[in-house]
Image (cartoon, rainbow, N blue to C red):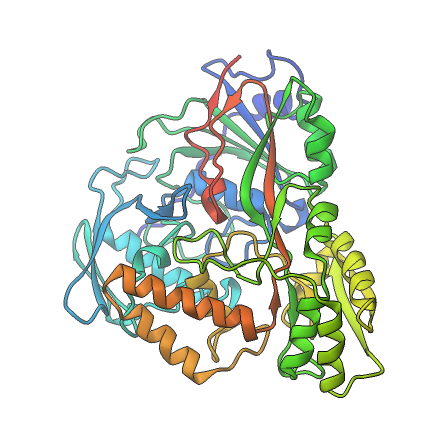
Length: 503
C-alpha cells in the first residue's frame, strides 16, 4: 500500500512576496507568470482532505488543480472525459460499466496513476458519505473491480445511465493507501503544492501533466471570506482573479479599464426551502400561494442588480434536459384565495431563516418578507451566522434560504429528492416519482431519458418545496492580463488550468 505525502515546499520567499500583492514584479516568479486567485473561503475551515466535508471554495479550487478527476462538465453542462477516457455499459442492464483510464497520468512523485488508485479513491469518497452528502452512493463498490492497470468495472446499485455525470468534478484521485489525509498527499493534476497555510496555498505547474502545461508557472490561492475584500484585491493589484463577487462589486468596477467582469449564467441560486412535513407547508395551496406572492422580477433586479433571470422553480435551468418553463407570474389575488381555501383567511405567520454567507442572501430574505406580507403572509426573519447556519439551519428548519449554485439535477435529486435521500430537506416523499426517476436512469436512449428527467424536474417545480424565484450570474473579477476564465455551471468554474496570464 502506497501512502505518499508531499515533501516540504521551497517557496516561502515567493509566498511572502506575492501575499502582499502589488505590481508586475510581484506577479511573476523567476520562471514565469503567477496567477493570484482570491477565492471564497474561511481560513478556519481549511481542510486537506478532498473526500470529506469541504466548506471552502478555495479548498475545492486547490483540489481541482492538485488532483485529477474522472470526468468534468463543459461550459454547456455536458459531461466530458478527464482521467477517464470512456465509460461504457458492460451489458444491457446499465448496472455494470467499463471505465477506461488514461495510461499517461502520473503522480507528481513519478508513480503512474492506476486503476487501483482510482478504485481506492472512490471507496474512500463513498466511505465518507456522511461528510459529503453521499456523493457516490449510486455505486456498488463492493461489486466493482480492477480489470487491469488502466481499466475498472464499476457496478451500480440499480441501472444508471448517467454514470459519466456521477463521476464528474469531485472524484479526486489520490494514491492507494492514502487513508488519513490530514496533510496533503501527492496528486496527478496540472499543479503541485509547494507551500501552504490556512490562508494561502502556493502551487507550481506540473509540466508532466498529461493535459499539457498551464500558461502560468505559479498559482497562489488565498481564502478570503469577504466578497468586497476579494473585489478590492483585484482592483488594487493584489490579486489577478476574485471569485464569486457580489453584483454590487461588479457594478462598482464595470467602468474600470484595469478590471474585467466575467459572468457565469445561473451560477447563483438562493431558493426558498419549505418543509412539506411541517405546517403550513404540508398544504399544497400554501406552497403555491408563497410561489405566486413573489415579485420575481423585483427580486432579480434588487438582489442580482440585473445580473440574472427570473425563475420558474426549476432547480437547474441550464442543463440540456431542463424543462422549458415560463417564469412564474405574480398573482396576489390568487395567492390570497389559496390561503383562504387552506383555512388561513386571516393570514399566516412564518419565520424565514437566512444568512449572509453569500452576497445577497440577507437582502433576498428582507425583500421576500415584504412581498409575502402583501398576500397576508407575515414573515419574521432570523439571520444566522455563516459559521453555524449550514449546521444548525440547513436541513433542520422548515423555512429558510439555501444556496444551490449550478448543482446538477440528477445528482441533487439522489441526495435531496428521493424519499430516502440523505439530505431530503423539503421532505419530498413521492414513491411514484422515485420509481419514475429510477426508470429514467435505466433508459439507455438519451433523448427519451432526458425527456423523462425534464418531466420529473417540472413536477418538483409544480408541487415541491423549492421556490426558485430566479437565478443570478456567478460573477468573477479579473485583472486586464487574465483571459479564459471558465464560465460554465457548477464546479466547471474550478478547472482553471487553461486560463491565460499576460503582462
